[in-house]
Length: 252
Image (cartoon, rainbow, N blue to C red; front, side, top):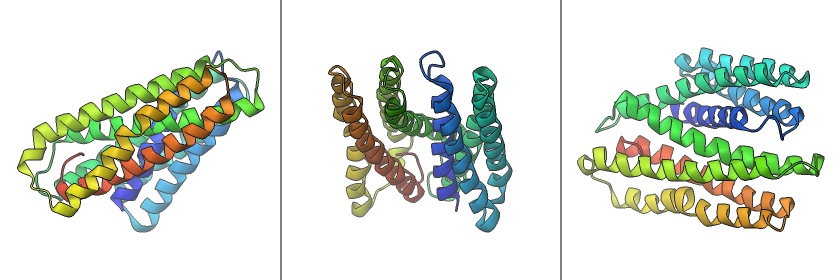
């Protein structure tokens, strides 16, 4: 169950980190409060899986994600943004620990195992990508509650998402350079790579550009609709990456 727990941890940690980086000045506290519950829920899912079917090592870090998300939501409810964000930092670190453990376990049990630092970089780059696109989509919805809110924070998250796609792509290139030549790929695996890279790294680029241009109209509802697609293709790409890495033994 390392694959499931690790992927959920990437989502939770990435979202927590994106919320920490989002503008407290331009975004109302309710956004942070509500989406701390999402971090909490993802942590609870990881904890439940770890408790019921393993791996046990992930249970207590997942509990830390749950506790941090819960306390952060309370702090945000009272307008205590800085302490709330500090708790989300704790949640992000705990989730990254789980995601790194998952990647290390996967590498240690397949040919061509990669190093612990490689597992950490793989988990972090995936988490940042998933977290930023998810936070951007959720913020797009928030404009329905706060139509007068400035567009600057949404543009910042879109820019961060684009940077995360570039960073994730650069890490994939580095991974292939360091570990790829040592690992022969079956034809079925090689064919599956088209889904991983086409959906996960290529498709988000024009979609994020379309979102940016849509905000120039401005039309936040249409931009949010495009961000839905960005989230979907990113999830497909990163799920494919997790499954492929489990087969070939290095991050893809």
